[in-house]
Length: 382
Image 1: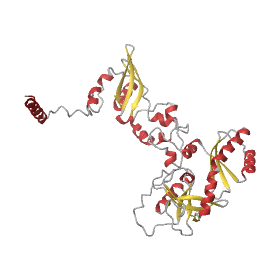
Image 2: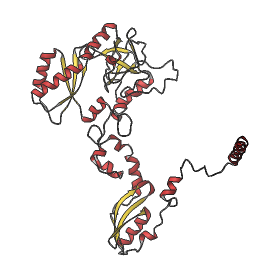
Image 3: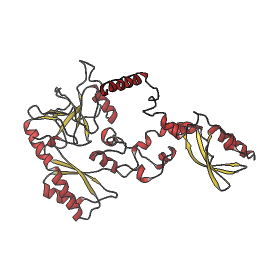
Image 4: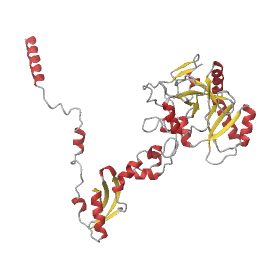
């Protein structure tokens, strides 16, 4: 059996068919779980609840009712409806309990069980089921196209016992796929389950590299997708460019929410109604903010020449209070002295980290060596 047949979303480094174990220590599993408790030896460590992963980002918590000795990477047969499914153990011990809390699974609810470690016959049937996934997906797309259904079949996952297949699809509107299922059942002779997913879930299942150079968050660790709005980008002073704000799923990037709370806390000190300031030189209009330096940038036209200057938040508040009293200050940009380090020219800023900035210190030993070399050269020439 080849490694690609066991891929299920990643490439394992080694497959042992005799023991039914996949070595995934060097494998970039989707929604990978780092066991930060593995170095702590606890003889009373729980082995009742085990996390099992399937294709791509599908995972589940199962009860080890038979008290099997399992390790991460073991291939197991688990309870399914109907029949059984084949998965790979991804987390054991205390870390599996933390995963239960993460998935919000209640222990009092009946949890599906792990039957056994996968046998040779289970692995052979699993191999055959995996080989059907791509051809069935392509054939289903042809049938859906012939029925003029506005849907996209994104992925197919076969159950380990080859009796059932889950077809993941994307559709913007409600789709009546009863005729599609009827034709699929007649042709494939299996039980079919249609599961609709969103664009974010599809990106997580397919995977990819984001503009930050790392794997997509929805592939590596995210299990919940919170709504993202353009207001998040506006509050962080980002350019409202759809091409830059959209991810590979064509939706707004999930990372726009990561630092939003920090920006909201920093913006509490900024005045809300500060779009324009009245001065004797004219009206100054707000351009942008430097949130973490507490600076607000304003543009004013003097002799039809636009001038942009930065004002501190305290100075802006002071001018707003003066405007409410009908007082228009003069030369506010000249009076303002922003806090921070002294102004540094562009050339000085470049030279501050220059690699050759220490080369000016002359080494007297170099001159001596050069003189000796010249002296020896003269003796040889004479």
